[in-house]
Length: 140
View (cartoon, rainbow, N blue to C red):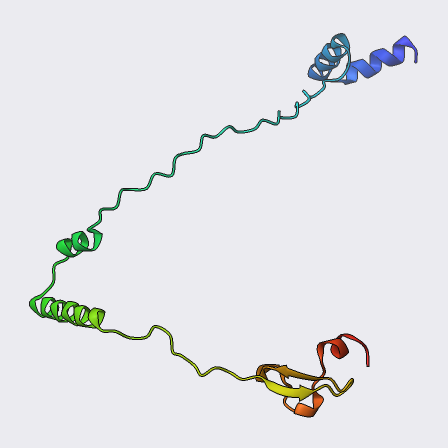
């Protein structure tokens, strides 16, 4: 390119475009965007708050009932229920129902012919289909 062509090209450009081009040329080239540095990985130090429980008074149900407002009918019902509870507390009853002891049944293995005494819950619906442990773990 000779000087004449360069002058004609420069005359066609805007003054603003020329200023920015000159500034870029003097600063060392085109503008570069600032590079973002990766954020540092930090561990958050937290303090454990003590799990403080409110002290519970030994008379918690009584304290609750003192705050509740009951009608006369509700008070009578509450007294009857507490009287019934006191009567039932003194009565003796069995906690568990005693069952009759289960007796073992003698069965014969269909594979090896060995007889065993086992509980009835271990027998299949048809007694003739029973297999002992040794035969049931082996193929056949």
